[in-house]
Image 1 (cartoon, rainbow, N blue to C red):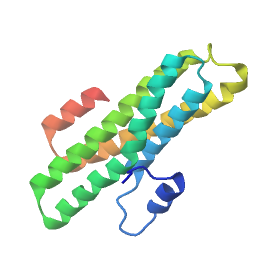
Image 2: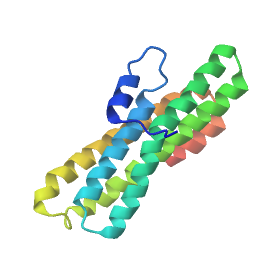
Image 3: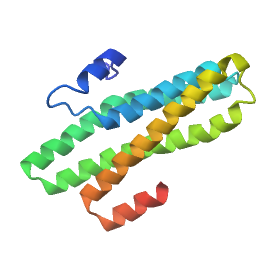
Image 4: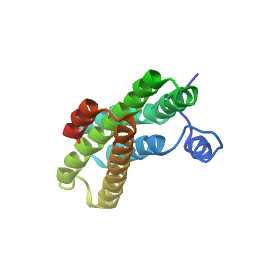
Length: 162
């Protein structure tokens, strides 16, 4: 069974009662959409290939985030602190990966305007806007999660990477 959702299915899951889909899934979806635009506008086959790989990872992360966050919520409801912390760290690590990929791609797209055909510059700007949204959303979730975890050593490690 595929873990990838259509855009409509993803958007329908977000407001559903009891859904674990939310901000984390949307940061991943924004990253995936940005990757698709970068693939479209870049004339470089190597960049297209690498960006396609990032898009696949981001797409997978839309459901992976919800799965992990559902475990966070269940552990919290059951009062299983160790399980809660383990799963919240996993959710945080996933958002850190999204943050880092968005950061990497933003740096790459800064130089790309020289290679992109003028007809596609607006698409490149849209990709950059989606990358910024993905990066900022992931950072907001990371900061909320590390605050919730209340683990000084883990917080210090994560903050070094932001």
